[in-house]
Length: 58
Image (cartoon, rainbow, N blue to C red; front, side, top):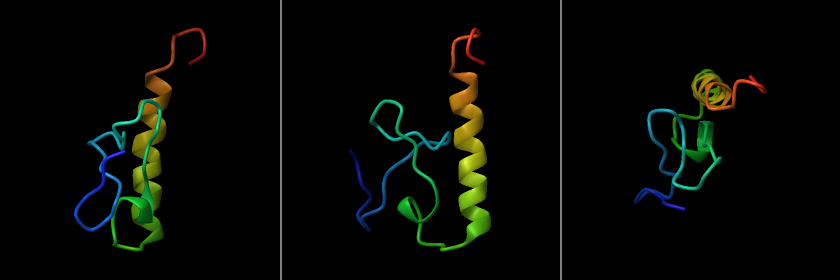
């Protein structure tokens, strides 16, 4: 698992870490400590996870 110099989990623009199927949201990836930021991260991660499923599961 990769971390930033501040100790946060490194994620890409889809909230994916460098570990397969592991997403990071909220305080794990940023120090903003705002529920609205965490909800935004969660929405992005959930959309990407959903669209990455095979069609029979989506």
